[in-house]
Image 1 (cartoon, rainbow, N blue to C red):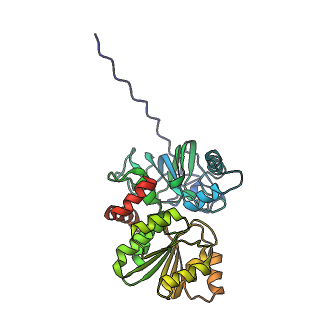
Image 2 (tube, one colour):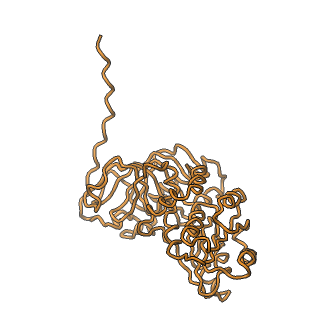
Image 3 (cartoon, rainbow, N blue to C red):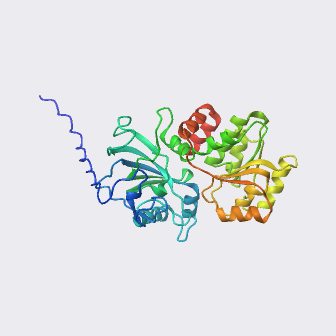
Length: 369
């Protein structure tokens, strides 16, 4: 009696051909994919080329498993007209991708990032020989500049603002990414990498004895900011968290990384200022971090800060106009800093912090893992 032959593995799809270098030479910053307007950088471009039947030099083709939508964009889509059930939300995402070639929310202007596997590497990349097809990666650039197609949405996970999908994406030669570590669950790593730029920026600004305000302190980036402020500044740093969602406020208190957690709406700046001053012994704080996912919170990051202090706007819902003119209007000589999602070594910095702070890791695992 003959043994049953093992099943044949499914055939691998053929590699995508390389696009000719003329009339569209590949650009490491991705301008060759901009369609409207032609030649623009892909982030400000209204529409980008998401035709992956051919690749350009330096591109990485990714088989997408999960979209991690940024908090401001996800909330805006949830609260949009026409309802907020999963099918409506899915339709909004697919409509944006169909129209723009990327997940670039036209209301918030923000995107998110993604998790997937390397499908193909076009020649001309600096990492040639260092990563191969099949590697699990998370992009460290915004979906608002990432050419993307989505064939199907498999699941919506609202607590983590994630969508499991079948799709493809391309990142450019200049686009940073991170390999998914083997010691952390993929969804946990994705949640951390989504806001990985926050912690290194905090480490650069916080010193022992600094007084720190974190708005939206119970969310992903807010927790990382508060945790890094405690890790960098030590016991002498006073950390005040503001969180409007009571469940998150309770969890933040249980973490013990803040000296005080205020259950307040950051859209009420005068109330926030009064409560922060009371929590800080009557003094304005040295430094604030805005990590909220709603609009009209700029002044809550500015009013409680002392003259020559720093208000760091990490939230994608921030309006430069409201922050700049608002600070001028109340006579605040405060340095306004735009949050940068990229810092050298930020992925490993934030993942290392997650490994070194078990209570923070446990909370992230419950929420996002």
